Image 1 (tube, rainbow, N blue to C red):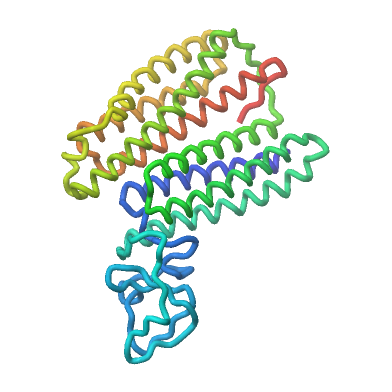
Image 2: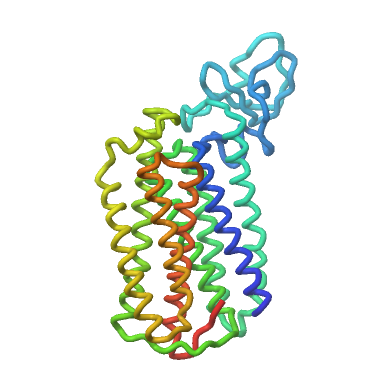
Length: 344
């Protein structure tokens, strides 16, 4: 059990690193740094200069490699060496989207994001193997691990769809929600495989319902925040990356709801913290939740009133993910207090 839990914790950390990497991709506008998937411009290791993506005479190409010509992506249909002039028969136009730009920084930021995701698959597979050894002790661990693998596969497919649709609005939100589902499943595995016991009192119905409500509202707030971020991306396309002071000049209703919702979340968590700590001072994780909320609010205020200072966007998202993780784990603890809760 302890070995399984350690691997689950490592996997959870990697999920958070994937979220950080994804947030950096969004912050830098690198989402289409690799316009194809799973390769990047048709290469397992992406190019470092535009010359690699230009047609040249007497140059060897492999099937699937990409060039940029006439502001379009073209894919080599077979292995061949170019002649002295361009031949249409050797190339097929990439038809999934019309994005055909190369920025070395965007490309490698997106590529690193994909590498981190690939690394995540290693401990995930190890978890699956270890879970079979625990099948006789607790079948639910094996079943939840299998579900986690399935969700990770869905996340990978969504990653491809996000690229193929050129960061279509709505798909990024779904992508983020699935990441939070992964966090919840891994926390469940960590909890179920923990052997420690701590004396936490059973919560009254009002406090338990308040905890569940607060966790659900946090999730809803993340969805709203992701949609606000999609609006910001549209503003960047219209106004440019150097016009940060104009990005929120005409915000949508979702922005105002997201901003107002933060006040509700702060108040709910303060009330929840007071109730939990009064019931039992050992509910210390709620203090971490309050810290993450405070820092998240500060980063949100900075983005809104200080024109998006550097790194505030990924920090804001990661803090929300950490808050959700803490809240969900407290939910797991409180739902099992009658049996003696497990702890990290």
